[in-house]
Length: 310
Image 1 (cartoon, rainbow, N blue to C red):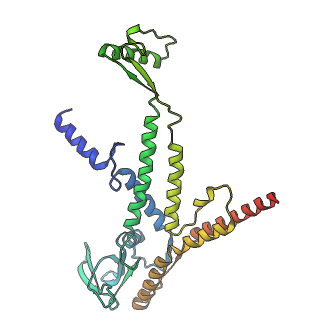
Image 2: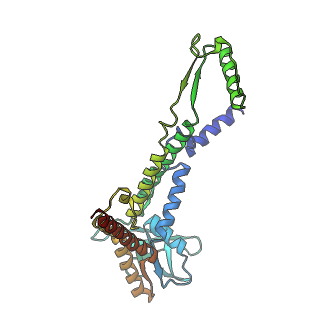
Image 3: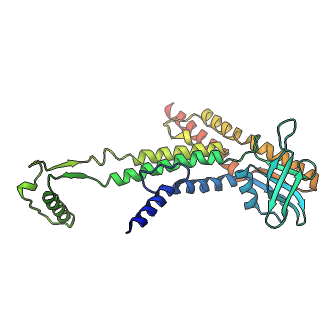
């Protein structure tokens, strides 16, 4: 490999942070994987009904959650929900115009509340990039720790040699051992402790923490699910879980997306009034089923434990 190829390879590795020693919390491939994984979870929270046939829901959810909002307005292709920017400011520091640049429809502006509705997710008109960045970094860091730990667990012993000849002898002996030879004989000069030659044993089992990191990883995942309103059993790994604690966790989980839900409901109401649409939004049945089933199931488990202790 030429020096140019090596330099380019180092540049590529540095950019994608593929090596365990490289730490890049946002751009590494593991973080990108988790970012996409989290988006699929977020897209499944709400169910949008009464959608016009011309709408593309993948496009809709992507720009709603990533950009923070979409513009619902009338066009030559009918009423559409389009990717948009926004500008202007009113007395409440809210935008007054949607600025649209579409490859098919062209570039144009719409006035919010007059001929368009800016359906936005949050009070600050931002998307959830900050949320995705935080948890994708944490999960990628867990994967990095697991990968490094798995790699280190392969190193059972480190050999010290005081000369190239001794190193070659030890390497040859190690190769023969790995081939399954029942007996390998070394010269005294290459034996452990003689003239600076030595063997250091790595306590592989004692240093193996991948299982603990995996548990931490699942806790981080459950923290993320809590943030997006999906009930989970993050605190339920303990020996005993009171039903009151489970109910409190479910309540906190539901509160996390009330703001999202109210903003979307208000925007959809405005769009229905302005363009005579029949849109409606609600939590998916699966999300609500998870919450209710976990609460009921854990409550029954706790009740069973109570009966047993009595």
